[in-house]
Image (cartoon, rainbow, N blue to C red; front, side, top):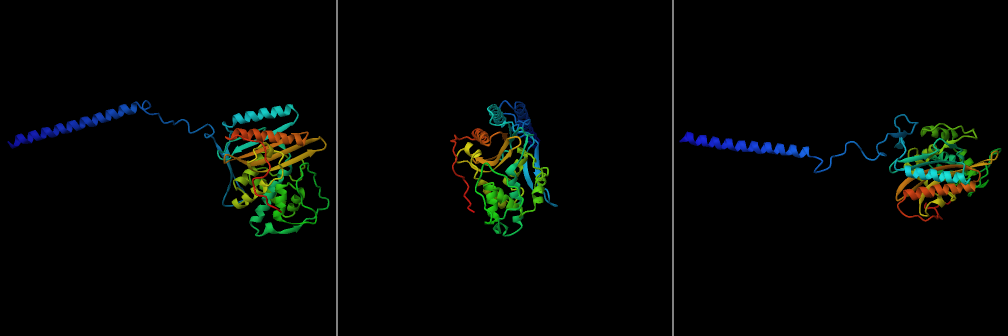
Length: 362
């Protein structure tokens, strides 16, 4: 009797194990069937593309030189031009061609960068121009670098005296200027130099900074050293843009002094270029430069600025050459206007009357 019960019990146990193994096997087979049908019930993950063509790129990192143990980042960006900005580049090239046909301009170089995405385009990248008053930007940076380590320097007062034999270049777009015999702080001089492009304030600042520091700044941010004695020194739109990018990224100065530099440039009295081409409420800080060659009757007009559209920061540098400075302002306006229209989502009305930055009286 006992042996019979044991046999029946073993038989039931065997059947349970067989059923369990059967369900387990069916589960494996079902899983294999489902995985083999993957793609029919849900999409296959994409392993071949990691984002847009703009994202699949080799990036260049420019680091600040001159330190022993650290290398601060000046700029980061893809090596190749943006695919997404190509339609805008085509339109800009078409605009330039039409402006050349009307005789408004003979040469144009453009550099545009979207800081949020790092995307950029360049037109006539190899063309170089006389930087003119754009050189006041690296001068300002060198002065502020000195002020970072010298407490109270910006409040230092000096009496402006013209240097005997110092050549003063005339300016077609003349802003407010300091006067001989007047007393000014270093802050005042920076304001007149950056906001009003005042040559006399520039000369006064040059006496308060070692000019070799200005020259070394070029090399520090990855540019060739300029020959300051060469009246025919030239630079490309993309290379000059490095200075504006350095301010935006706080790659050379501290964030506080970089903000100060941007605010000085935000008070620009030059309203004939980008400002007239962009909407009145566009937040922007910028610098212009003009240059004339009496022997060839050629003129150059440039502008570089950081502007904000829909909260996104962009850098635009435009360098132009032609016969008439006033016509070149129209070129700057049209290029800036087209650029903003293509990167903005909102409709624009062209008219700017006042700066969006607070006025800093001197």
